[in-house]
Image 1: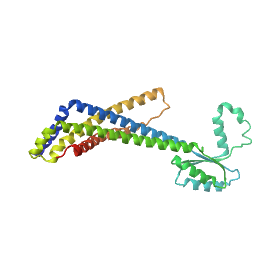
Image 2 (image 1 turned 45 degrees about the vertical axis):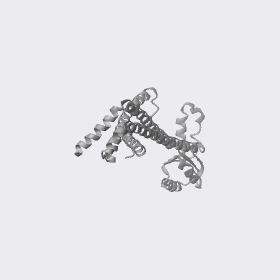
Image 3 (image 1 turned 60 degrees about the horizontal axis):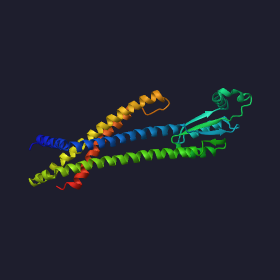
Image 4 (image 1 turned 135 degrees about the vertical axis):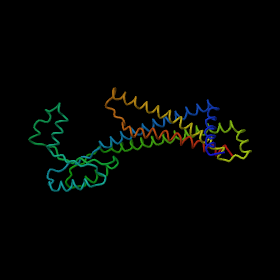
Amino acid sequence: MSLFNTLVYYWREAFTSIARNSWLSLACVGTVAVSLMVLGCSVLLALNAAALAAELESAVEIRAFLKDDLAPDELRRWQKEVAEWPEVSTVQYVSKSQALEEMKQKFADRREILQGLEENNPLPAMLRVKTHRADQVAGVAGRLAAFPGVEEVNYGRGLVEKLVQVVRWIRLFGLGLVVALAAAAVFLVSTNIRLSVFARRREIGIMVFLGATSWFVRLPFLLEGMLLGLAGAAIAAGAVYLGYRQLLAALQTAMPFVQLVTDWRLIYQILGGMVGAGVLLGSLGSVISLRRFLKV
């Protein structure tokens, strides 16, 4: 048998097996599609949760209030040193007058409580320091507090630690959910291939008796699993794509302050990854089932 005829045989057998067990194949494609749909939604949820966590982390800042007698040269030297710390992303100096202007903007509707502060400004100058990650805040705040020219350091002690825990749990939950659903998809494909092997057990026995090689018997089932995974993944990717577009449009109208991830290049990569994952999971399910239930 030529290579072309062999390949035609493999694909024909795979499609024939799917058509022969049409209801079972349809159920398998549906369950794989649902599993990968939930998987895709979970990835998008984890992506948006990570973006929200990163946004919250970027909003965390350390305020180092400076003593009034701190020399300008000492301040510039110290500010340059802090900016070179590997944990620090930005350092901003806020003078006493700038701090007062910010307070005026914050309490614009209650200006009477700020009357007289221009002549005798009690607000201290400060450094606003941001770190790359929220879990670095406490360490940097401790180092800032050790400088002689610092009166007090404020960074929301307690709140930052809780934020770090929430971010960690969000990421762990997303990862755990993705792993669990991937395992479920493999199990479903494996079950379908096992049933296909059982339905064709007599035909397989005859092929082996006539001298068919192990891969000659196995490859159509492997292709069948890949096709089932591909079909389910394509349905899931299309549904996730349409659903996410509808969600973005609805949120822009109803809740424009809620910002979801809109990097479509990244989203297309996720959808492509879903299709690839469907083929991979289908292949993996086939391999597991064939190793356990097809002894040739």
